[in-house]
Image 1 (spheres, rainbow, N blue to C red):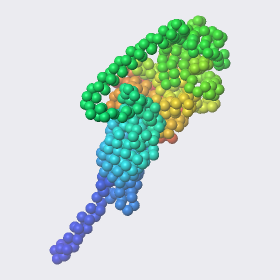
Image 2 (cartoon, one colour; image 1 turned 90 degrees about the vertical axis):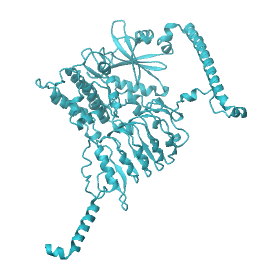
Image 3 (cartoon, rainbow, N blue to C red; image 1 turned 120 degrees about the vertical axis):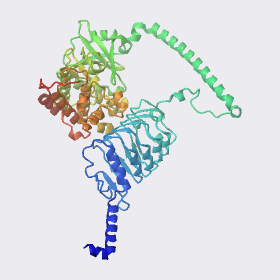
Image 4 (cartoon, one colour; image 1 turned 45 degrees about the vertical axis):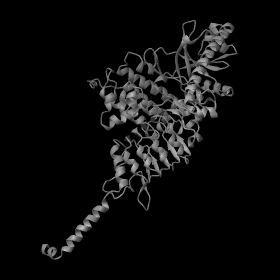
Length: 594
């Protein structure tokens, strides 16, 4: 054979060439290399990358990837709800033929890569429901083919770049539920979107959300003024003059405001009296009635109204998304909690009363009892049982005393049973929509009661300006709930899973230490799980933690906060797992926090 090759050197040369050609044919394309960089950046997933192989010639058969049939360039990357944990690497910008990028409903964190601006063929960009932080890159304004942009339900900050005004083809835009600030650009394409595209960003202002920006408030006039010829000639001096005018106007305005307040205050004081001005008397005098459910209030309407008239701001014990809460103490020593909800639509009174009657009929050991309500001309005053332990939020995050392990487990079980009753035993069933630690109240023995059930639905009408998304609380909301605004039992289960993590860790879902890393408490759990360090989530100040119980709770919490609703258990199943796997602790397995 050797002598044959020496006599025929051309055969050896041909074999070498064929080997080189075959090797070249197996070299992964540039788009494939960019996708492998994305895969490398992701630290955890549900196995979606199993067929992403480096030895492939192109990525066109990879899961979640679609290519152009002729050029073999990647045009779609769709990896929504695959439990991806990690940052989006800058190499994503090398996919410059990309038309759709869909990464919503994962646990991606870190900054938005400016290199995405290189993907100028993009038509749909979906990144909602992650933990992305930092600014919206101005380079996104180069995506001139973009028709849909959804960055909602992340932790983005800073202002909305004016470059987005250039996106003339944009028909769908959503940056709600972030931490954006400043003026919303209003001279281009973004003027076409209403407040639902921006809700949940307390620092934003602009005509799209009917919020006047501070700069506009400081202007002496409501509209722009055309400068005179003298102004144009003395522009430099005019700047100083403008400052003086603004200062003078502000000073005079402040003095007038103080004078007006003094006059109005004296008028109210003389005509209504100090006590009436501070209390409910003015509100109740227009005609009020008291409705009591099933004899739960052993007082006459006259007794209750007379006590309400004496209440003022000194009786306030809390405030939340649904209204101010007061402490109502009766003459016989009985104490109740009074929640004041301001009416927004008089036409809804009959509907409101009917729904309240349903809520008043819901009785359970682990639910806060609604005993009745007072119907005044301007508000509803809901009368609940008063729980002396306060809210779980206060106990976990504001009080110096620490809950031990048994107390935390007992609270978790009580909250689960209350929520399970609402989901499975009520007729009609009740979806809470706003499960969070401030809506879990505690009695003197730290027994949990679920409060505010049914109120989110009750206030969910167009006239009240409270939508399903606003009704919930950022950090507790399920990804699909933030995306669609449609609440189900499984969105409550997700919120309960977040609540379990909050109780285990002693940290709020949007603790500053998470936000700095682009995470919330679910993202933190996913990160720890990717490094097999889930147990580190436990509060180091909690005494008596048991390994077996902790592991069972973490397993349960991970099921509850799954990004896929169908993978979450029902609350009935949650109670079963708590009673079988958690409530029977193993005394020998105490957690060593050191």
